Amino acid sequence: MQKIFEEKNLFRPDLSVILKENIEIINWRGHIHGTPDMIVEVLSKSMLGICDLQNWKGDASGQMKNYKRLLMYMKPYLGLFGLAIICIVMASGANLYLPWIIKDMIDKVLAEKDMAMLNFISVSIVVVFAIRGFFYYWQSYLVSYIGQKVVVDVREVMFRKFQRMPMAYFDKHQTGETMSYLTNDVSAIQSALVDNLIEFFTEAAILVGSIAMMIYLDWKLTLLTLITVPLVGYAMKIFGKKIKRAGTLIQERLADLTSLLQESISSIRVVKSFVREDYEIKRFREENELNFQAMMKNVRLTALLTPTVEFLAAVAVTAIVWFGGYEVVNGIMSAGALVAFLTYAVNLANPVKRLSRIYGRMQTALAAIDRIFSVLDMEETVNDKPNAKILPKVSGHVSIENVTFSYDGTHNALENVNIEVKPGQMIAFVGPSGAGKSTVANLIPRFYDVNSGSIKIDGLDIRDVTVNSLREQIGIVPQETLLFGTTVMENIRYGRLDATDEEIVKAAKAANADVFIRELPEGYQTMIGERGLNLSGGQRQRMAIARAMLKNPQILILDEATSALDTESEKIVQAALDDLMVGRTSFVIAHRLSTIFSADKIFVIDKGKICESGTHKELLALNGIYTKLYNIQFAGVEP
Image (spheres, rainbow, N blue to C red):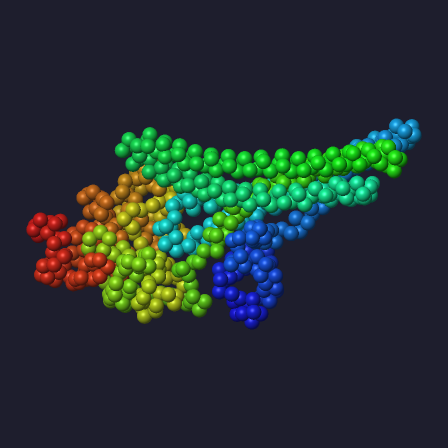
């Protein structure tokens, strides 16, 4: 696709991320199928007008570009949307009929005593409003359906985006902030697409229809009325910019509030243990107050916009009353026509007033839309190369060659690290906290990409294979096991989704977890609470080991898997880990040295560099950092 864009002189590097997202928008659910040239034709017309990244900030037209991108999500539903517009126009037509009824009542029924016209008017009112009710139902249903489907699609695309984001993103952003994108910001889209669109097209239909009828009745009077329109437009432009800024502030405050809620509630044990309930209430009150102030600023601007527009509309009505009255007095216009014209003018004023409110709400929604697309446009730093291969079944030969890595681009977490691991070997990393042990474990499955050097598995650079095929062959048992709020059976099955119940039980037995699982109220069908906190640390770890055994990876990473356990639990878990490591290439990040005495090789890491390496006995003989760590833990007592 990129090649085709380059041939057509449409491709720019800064559009590459958006190109990917827009192709996904059009084709991710199979709504549209076509040749690459057909897709290019669609995207080239939209992207050149939508994705000019250098002009996003600044001019008023740039404010609507993300809204246009959002409307691309409506592409699969354009047929239904066209039908909804027809229903809106038909339903709005009933409002345009009423002033004409008033005109005929005054000029024909009351002035000429025309009973036939009276009967016609009576029947037509019933018929017109029955038709209006029918079309009103379908306009509401269809627009709501389309809006909800777009919200579902956008939320899913955003969730897919977060699933693909590198670990570096989650290191820098709080969980509550990420949740706010998927809840508060996406909900703002619903307002922009459902409520605002229905009201916009309804009022626009009434506005256009009223102007047409006014021109038919008296074009001079209509011209006088429309003089105020530019003034209204100018007022809306000024207020729109301020309301959009206020809307951005609202979404940011909501994100902060959501982050605080998530952080405080998920850490409720810590809060209660330190008796910090009042402190958390104070924090919440402060954030809640900031959110209130942002909301009220938006309310003040929106409230000021409406009376401003109404005042300008009142000036127009005053001019109509005077000039129209002058024409009636001089016999140029009938009394019924003037009353009808005034009614249409009121119909004109109301849509203008409501459209100004819609515009204000739209500016608030645009702030949320901007935030959504700022996430979708983020670069996925860890992704597959265009020609990435599927990693075949590996033997477990891992080679780390001259690897240097930095999290922040300034300070190196690892510097010129070289490690050679043969299939089936157990390799251990020890060292002070922050030395770089976990960093090595994070680089092997490509949670991060190295800055220089390479990591190879069976001779293949891990950057040359697909991320999924790489991680499918690596099993990880972390220090803190996070379980899902489902059954024990489904938590273990997460290791391999197509596993049978018998295979899951077998894995649990191998992980020394079967006994305690069967003692649970409903055995393997017992629902685990949030994050598995109703289980002990040792039980959670054994379930994590069962999950890894079910996955059956050739390469295993144990990140201080027993450091948080008591002695008894550690013995049980360590026995399960010993069984798990048999025949696999294992990387063990150790806090307790007793767990790695039998390692084939131990690497001592300090300040991002390998300071010592060798077996347990070889390192003790060096009398270096490892020996100091050993003496601290064992106080000179031989194990």
